Length: 234
Image 1 (cartoon, one colour):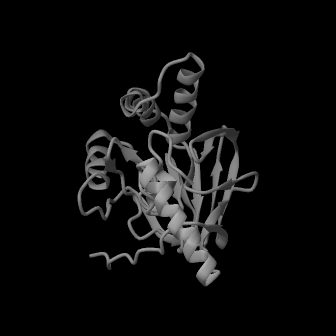
Image 2: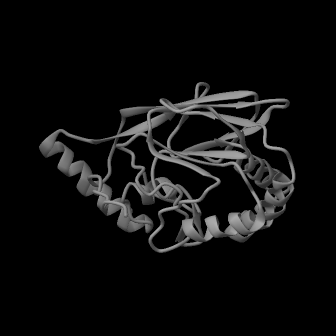
């Protein structure tokens, strides 16, 4: 791929230059390497049931933000990082005042009810604020299982502390209200009482009562540099 968007998360996560000319030269070299070694890098994907996701998926506040941003696009408004924040802040505030409806099920654990939202990621970072990476699951890679980041409280002060952690230079988010797994093989989210907004790769999927996400390893061959090894987390 040659990056041409505003965030280019997939290209950046794969180690491809953000500059289109540099990326083109990089990809030419990678294709030349393939002709010699006959080996592509292979990455996993997220099986969302109805769709494949490459970067991330989720239910709750992020999906409502995606829906809000898509509505802005339909009005002809240019979408920028600032525009995302302008949509995200009031959506998150309104969301925090609702009773949580989601139940999270992870293999080998008891179901966790009272979840406000859950983010499911396939790499880290999976989103940026301008050039600042927002890292929810630092141990998640295209070669691992799924990253799961879910909260059971959206009170202001704990939420701001959690936000500061995922924006820090050495992110390793931990909090009482946080359920986190950087290498989950699968998970299920169920919304009780009313359907919840859902999204995949920044595309609004609609309202769903339940979603199942599964990690499918080594599925997609890509022209990209080899995977970097992550240092052990503290």
